[in-house]
Length: 299
Image (cartoon, rainbow, N blue to C red; front, side, top):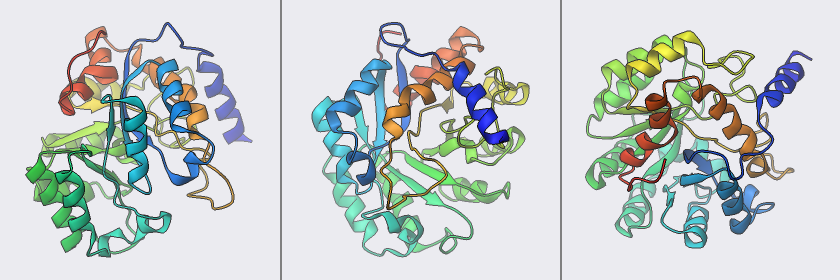
């Protein structure tokens, strides 16, 4: 019941339409997976991005070739990342996939992918991150000067710090600000790892509800505001448009996250509006343009 009430309150905060009025947005965390393609065509996905004035869309997919279909349909404002998962079950076993580094090298050499990820490092699922496969991917990210989108679902504060300090030449984009981590740990990580940029996708009432960044009125919490304003050039956000969120790759149900894109971005637009305009603009747009080395757009 509490979860339902929270979701209803949050939905009430999301504007019903942004068409024609929203400021440009860079969404740095999107997926176009096999179970999304079933219900959302590339044309439909592009239409939803346009409706929300998304001018830069960073997309990973399972299998990785699906992200390319969005760029082929939409143009160079769609940036595919090379996902390491050829099939759904790979997300928990990729650290042992000895063929992955060679596949990734070929993908980056082809010039069609603009980063590596999303890669999941979750304690308790698979082996420890320190494997030859992970090391090879990190070295490829450094060699090709592309970012690695990394998901670290760990409560230990030093888990990601060990990674980002091991590979200081890699530009890491930290998914969901660590997911379950409080702002003080995010602050410590960014202080110790200047090669880490942090994105705040999925930090909404529907996913990380126990670890909010905003209050019930949609306003950014004070501790998060302090961290963001301390590192205003290293935060971004996005939608991570996956739905339903309480089932991971449900074989019996298609993913309708693209149909909720406005809901997710509406939540972020609400708390972003409470920041100073120059900081809001950085998180909403310009940090991502610079990070992914894209040209400026009208703001």
